[in-house]
Structure formats: structure tokens, C-alpha cells
Image 1 (cartoon, rainbow, N blue to C red):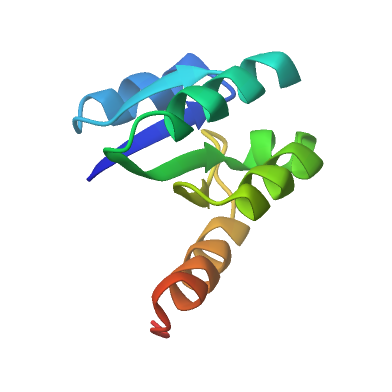
Image 2 (image 1 turned 180 degrees about the vertical axis):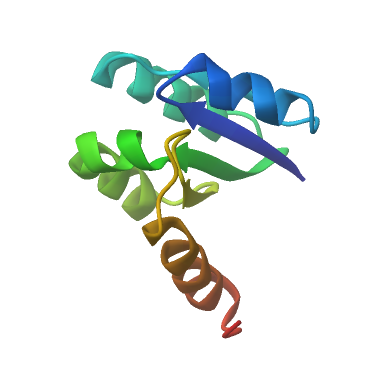
Length: 101
């Protein structure tokens, strides 16, 4: 099981790379779609981390990816921070495995 990051900037990607999480920077919706397709084709990628800015900008694209199945999509705070990230993470964990944390 691997994690993969789709970020709006290289700072987040480089930071998570230090923790062993590979990723890509999506500067457009086409970049995001390509990253989602690539991740869906790799069965060892189980969790996709997506920065808040990407999630807010391309909501419909990510909703379609969630509906199609595949890796679990989790929104993480962008480099500027964000309080909504924790709430989203706990909601996705609850939806995915039924555990409230």
C-alpha cells in the first residue's frame, strides 16, 4: 500500500517526498486528470493525498474520481495551512472504515 500526493505546489511535494511519499504537481485540470488516471492504474497506490487548493479548485473532477472507485482520496492542508483538513480526514476515515476518531 502506497500513498501518492497530488499538490498545487512543489513545496508540499518536496516535503512529503522526505517522508517517502511520492507525488506530482498539478497546475491545471488536465494535470490533475492525468495524475488521477496514473494513480488508478497502479494497484499499489491505495491513498491519494490531495492539497486543499486542488480540492477546492477542481471539486467536480475529484468527485468523479471518488465515484469511480479506486484509491481513497484524502484532502490535506495546503502549504499555507488550513483547519478544514483535519475535519475532512476524520470524515474520510469514518466513511472508509467506519471508525470515528
